[in-house]
Length: 528
Image (cartoon, rainbow, N blue to C red; front, side):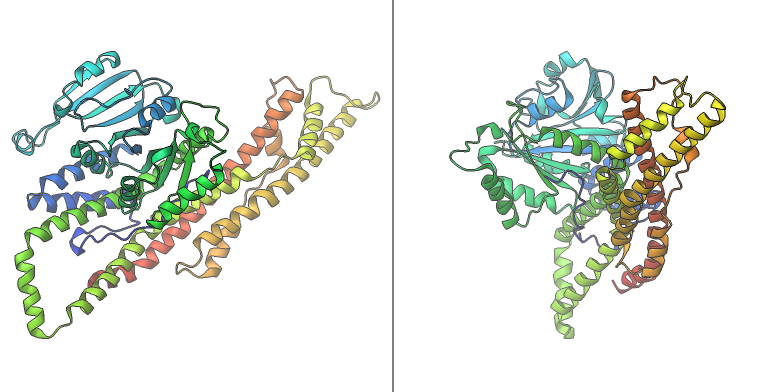
């Protein structure tokens, strides 16, 4: 499994020149573009996509990251989510006859049930809030007996790892006998920032899994596959490595290349092949990348909804389009050539529009990976830190005559030795790798190589002896345990400083790239 986030390559989604979406634009501009799209969609009377765009805008304003879990009906999805949450929040089987979406957030225990309303009633209420009811968790199942009347359920429970701005999204099983369940799952994808597709070990390569995963990749959002119930594996029948290779090949044959595949067992948590800790770590990394993920998801969802709206309008306007085809044929124009040129220009426009946002997310992912893997406190450095901290311990003294001066000199000498070694470790393990990583990620997109090299070389943090001194907790009990604590602290603080510096400088370069792309974007829009 990839233990860090890999943003999927952008999928060019045809949206039409009328959408006004501008990839890589600041958040306020993107929201304004989506609001403009909403107004045009509602003018056509397309209530279905208008409702989804309103939901998308509300989600964007909240800046909440939605980690969506969907997939096979009997794959243990609910049990997996319950274990992540540390509590039995979801029943092992879905609400009877329901096709609703369940969101789970961190907070005081409770639930809110939102009931369905048809388009006519929404318009009669002036697009007001749908009817909802707040209920205790232990009464939720009773309130949800009539699942057909419920659209969504919002569950709150103390789940620290979600923090204030992340939520789990549970969708109905896609292979239910009720087609409404699959429609509900598909209808929730515009709210999902990352998709986790859960499958039963024995049914991974079923056509319904392969086809649905293929459909989800069309949204261009990060997709992770979870193969659950691996306790069913029998090593004597097939090696686990061979099984994993078969899974990869099956999805690759359908053109599905997920950002990661995780193998889990809820029933046997300590199964040797279970990657539960990696799943938990992945969720943490995704939550850390919340802002670029939410921004990228907003653009992808808006484009997908615009494309779906355009398809709906195309069906409605088919008679007029047929008349235009006849006119083109009569004029001698090569329709296929015109359409091919148009499709090529639109694909290039979509790629360039989304480039800045995707580069921002990619730089953050790459820098995070470098910093996570950097070891700046090897044993030698830790020993030097211990020696320096010993010199800061109350009662430390050197010699009998002129002890104060000798003690101060010894302390400075130990500090200098620690600083020289630590600064060297940071330079070789962090600074150079971060600079090279940022440079490699930003090159090849149109800006001069020299300007990118100059910007990357500016990613440098001066860690002085005084900085090391300032990290010491004078109230601590000096000893081996505090040496470990101090070593971890200076390593984490140094990495944090480099992370901020790398993000700030890469943002400068990406902003310059976005500005440099504007003439090309304008030319493409005019061409379209």
